[in-house]
Length: 203
Image (cartoon, rainbow, N blue to C red; front, side, top):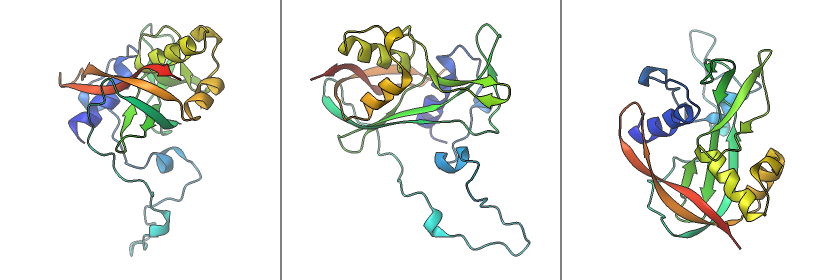
C-alpha cells in the first residue's frame, strides 16, 4: 500500500479519536464496490482446478492519478461517493468508549485532470450488529464536517439544519468550489502531504 493511501485511511480514524496503529489500518482491496456488497460474486475458486476469471465483472475505474496541488483553484465537483466499510472490518470504539463505529470512505471527484480527494470523518454506528446510516459531525473539526459546515454557510444555514440527503444531493449537483491545499499528517508515519480540500463553495 502506498504511503499516501495509508495516510488517507489512517486519517479516517485519527479524526474520530480512534487509536490506530499501522497494522490495524484496513487494507484497500482496490474494489470497494465488491468489498461492501454482500450480493457480489465470490472470486475465490471453490474447487482445486480453479475458476476462469470473468473480466466482464472487473471494475471499470482506474487508479487515481497522482495528486496535483490545486490550491486556490476553482473546481467543479463532478461526483461525491460514500462507500460503506466491508462487513469484516473490525468495529472501533469512539473516543469516550461508549459506541462502536466504522469509518466510511468519502470521496469527491473534481473536474481537473481526474483529481479526486478523500475526506475523513464519515462513519457508521453499530445498531445491533447492523450499520446505521452514515453520519457526519456538525462541529467542523474533521474534513467531512468542515465540508458540511462550508455547505451550510453557502446556503445561509447552520450545519445542524443540513440533512445527509440534502448535503449529498448538493455535492452531486456539480457545484463549484474553491480549493485549499491543506497539510495533513499521517499519525502512523508522520509523513505530511497536502490534500485538496474545499475551502468554500462559490456561485
